[in-house]
Amino acid sequence: MNHQSSPSPNETSRREFLRTSTVAALGGAMAANLAFPYVSSGAGAETIKVGLIGCGGRGTGAASQALGADKNVALTAMGDTFPEQLQRAHDALSKQAGAKVTVAPDQRFVGLDAYEKVLNSGVDVVVLATPPGFRPQHLKAAIDAGKHVFCEKPMATDSFGVRSVLESVEKAKQKKLALVAGFCWRYDYARREFFKRIHDGAIGDIKAVYATYYTGPVKPMPPANKRPAGMSDVEWQVRNWYNFVWLCGDGLVEQCVHSIDKVAWAMRDVPPLKAVAVGGRQTPNGEGNIYDHIAVNYEYANGVRAFVGQRQISGCYSQTADYLMGTKGNGTIGASRSPKVAVEITGENTWQQGPAATDMYQVEHNELFASIRAGKPINDGIRMSYSTLMAIMGRMAAYTGQEITWEQALNSEDRLVPENLKWDMSLPIAPMAIPGKTKMA
Image (cartoon, rainbow, N blue to C red):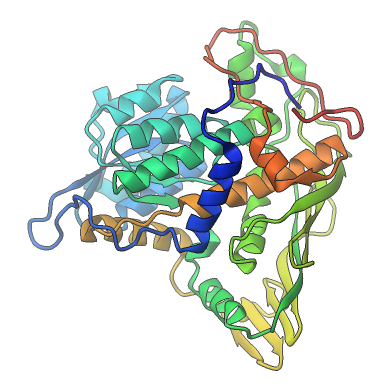
């Protein structure tokens, strides 16, 4: 798994960093009541300027939701690696939001350094929605520049990136900057009520959790002979980012991380002790090096087990659901055959609720911008980092065939994302991991 040179050890003890950040998480590190320089609300309110970094489908959607979250907000800068993708996003957002899109031609930036130009354009808030391999670098730059952030999931594709994100999280707290994560289910009203009841003891003590993310392929890798003549290694991989571990993290990390985040939510964001996993690649995928199925068994300090199954293969059983088993009953999410039931508790405290009326993606931005206006910044930093590391930990266990502890995952020297990435640099594709042979640094 170690495809790049290892970084120099962080001077701060990672064991101590883990201990203190865990305490912070358990102590409620949302920072919701911290006062910070805010943008006024009400009549004549100052316009909040938004910059979009990463103009794909999710970035376009997130920008649209940001523009709908506040009456006085404008999209003033955009950045993407590819000009055609930026243009598509600009056209779509202009059609949807009209006058709220005020991105002048000289504020549309293209290239690997586009994020820096957006950050230097005078925006107040940035939406980070590039492939997740870039997330730690972009988040660090955004916080260093003093920007409020909406940060799509996952937060990184390797442990080095997670450690960088944790450092950015602490800096965001110090600077009183809002940091909202794209773990959208945390902003779904029905699931919020469900987990409140779970944490209040509706099913007693949780004994086990089973989460599924069984779906089809996302973006299959084109064959190597479809690569245009003269296209660099970096461009080829970035254009097909979902098929490379350094860019997407694998399906477990890029998509199934939503399910892992709900496991973490059920467990009050206390990390698991260790994990074992199985997985592999059943369907051919050309030069791509991600698995198409992984099943992880997480073990917690109190003996609770959490099982996560992920598969991205066509023609198979599909389901995305969550099952919580307790001493007084069970809780399920997305498992009912009725579209009127989103979440349900059975046993001593029977209860169910339908889908939330307000779209969770919009709620994310509504609450982000409200916190900016109020001077009470939301900070999702600890939990968004922990959920991401849980996913990476599961991938490590599957790729190596070994039992991986939480501290091993946090401290790993695996650095998948290339340093000093250049458009024309040589970037050989790492081979597919083989359990029992692939080693973890």
